[in-house]
Image 1: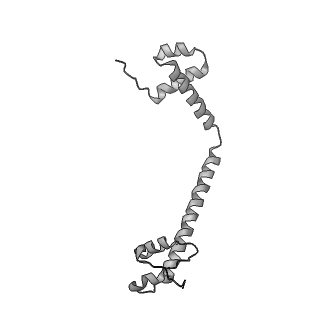
Image 2: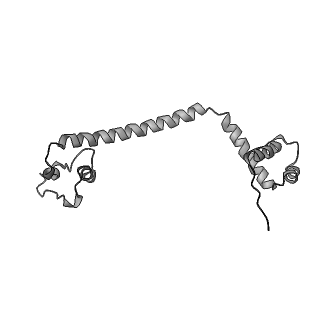
Image 3: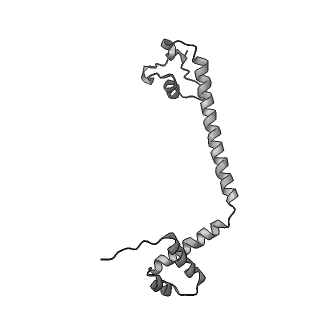
Length: 132
C-alpha cells in the first residue's frame, strides 16, 4: 500500500528553491527528498509564478478592485434610490389602495418589483383594457 506524504509549505519551498537554483538535477532532488520529479517541476513552476507576481505592482490590482467595487455600490445605491422614491411618492395611499400605486410604465422599476415593494400578489394585478 502506498502512503501519500503531505508536505508543508516550507518543505515545498525548500524543494522548489533547490530546483530553481539548479545545483542538483531534478532526479537528485527527487531521491533526496522522496518527491516525484513531476511534483518537483510543478512546485518549481508555482514558486516562479508566485515570485513573479510578488514583484508586480500590487497597487494597480487593488485600485482596479476598489474601482470595480465602487461602481457596483453606486449601481446598488441608484437602484435603492429609485425604489425609495417610488415608495415615498406612494406612501400616502391607504393600505387598501396599494394596487392603485402600481405604475406599469415606470421608467426603472418593473411591475414585478413594484409588487414586491408594495407587498402585493402580482397575480391580483390586472391590466386596464383601455390603457388608462
